[in-house]
Length: 104
Image (tube, rainbow, N blue to C red; front, side, top):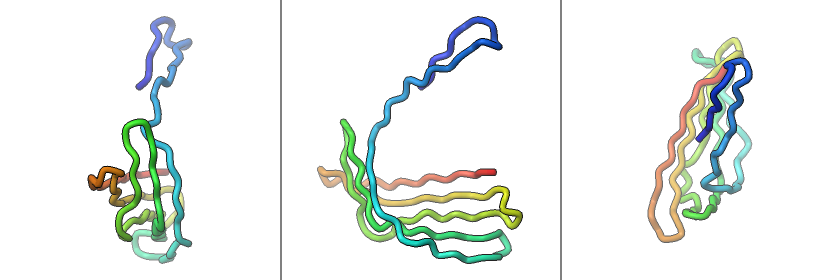
């Protein structure tokens, strides 16, 4: 969440009031690289382990089907990202996480 101050638009400042929900860490494998595909270079980066902890949730990666799929455009100036994994909370609930994005 951000807060905006009124006043001269050239002097407006934004103060970030966001609070992280979790912190964590994990391990990833070396990327599998598929160069020169029609869509560009593809990188598949498997997530080997993941642990997230916070005030309201703590979870560990469940299973082995977790990875980042990155595609770099043929000119190398942009691409897409697709990240997916399943987590199991300390109280045994399952959470599917999917993030996608475009860069460049």
